[in-house]
Image (spheres, helix red, strand yellow):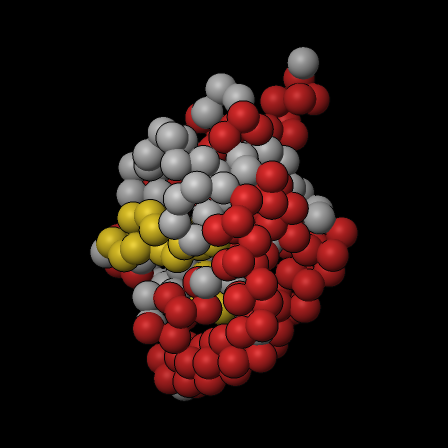
Length: 204
């Protein structure tokens, strides 16, 4: 009942409520982005959805318009050079993710689930296939996000996504939701350079 019906109902009403309540923050961020760097306010990117379908994810733009398209941050040689002045703050606090509430409202995403992979992140997509993590809607946040986020290497991240698939329930979603709030406040696991970056630094 929860997986097939109640989860979607909760996602719809919580995303709608979030959009209404956070609308002043949306407006303030939109103005700051427009005033501090040339380019659009929102950033659209093709991502992998449920059953490996594709959809356009929405984010507040945090990088310059000359950033290589469809390239994961961890594959950029120096991602910091592309991040805008306000972008670094938004990425650290996850404020850039707020427009995904519209993706949730539309039904492309859920509040809790595996983070949507880029369409060309074939290694992550393949790993998630092993755990059936591509068979559910991707989320705004998820089990992997509160257990390492950017610090995690792909195989570990996919395994955690698989663990979420197995344990998915209302109580487990609540655990992920409140765990995310704690992680965001502490900026846990945020490393510019992306997937497995912390592990790389430890080896150097």
